[in-house]
Image (cartoon, rainbow, N blue to C red; front, side, top):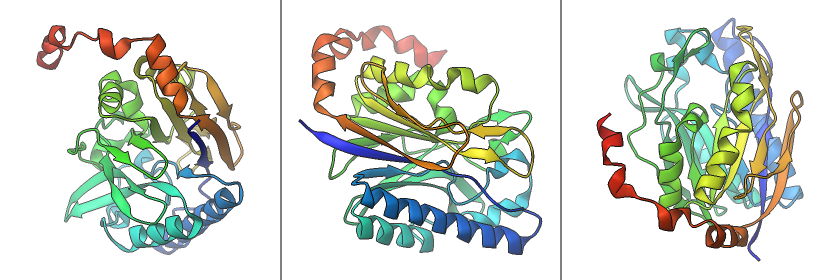
Length: 288
């Protein structure tokens, strides 16, 4: 058996965004809160830990304001160095979603992954960028990802990353499976409404179609823009689409699940979706 213990952090932004000083104070508070969750994860023998989308700030895409550009971070940089030390200290494979500045004026919605010795294994940049009214004005802040769908070989298995809105697109979910993902993490910032109906439909379906585990992470609480309530409900689904564990709608918490990666072989030997694929018949998809 290849047993792995997964941890998902669903947390709440606390404080206002009225001034630069208050934003910076609350960002530091948010980082420290997540450092506390990492300590808790080690105590609970978690091996892989994933934070929520844009973990150290509020979901600032609820407004269009250039003031948020200054909170983008270089990779590598001071925050990734701090997170590398956190991964090493607590012996965690750690996934850290953040606002990346690649160059002046070039920004991405990015997740960084560290191995449990603190080594930065690489990054994933969110490929699908929504522009939804009201409250999801991401094209104002992010360029579409340009790194494809990488899978990272970690100390505990092969990990893929999809970010929030990506989850509505089955093509990337399949690419992650073809690239060897055993666990796909989807850190998100999702409010109650239309998406809540889809929250536990789409991603278990990706798990079934691709024969891997998927871990879906969402923040909790209501933020200063009052555009909706983030409904938490973080969960892990297995390759049969069964939800192994799920967090609450309202509470900050570390959601923990035990999985057995050997189930992937068992399921794929039963449902031969990779054998029966017909990629030569799908060529028109990329032309439409």
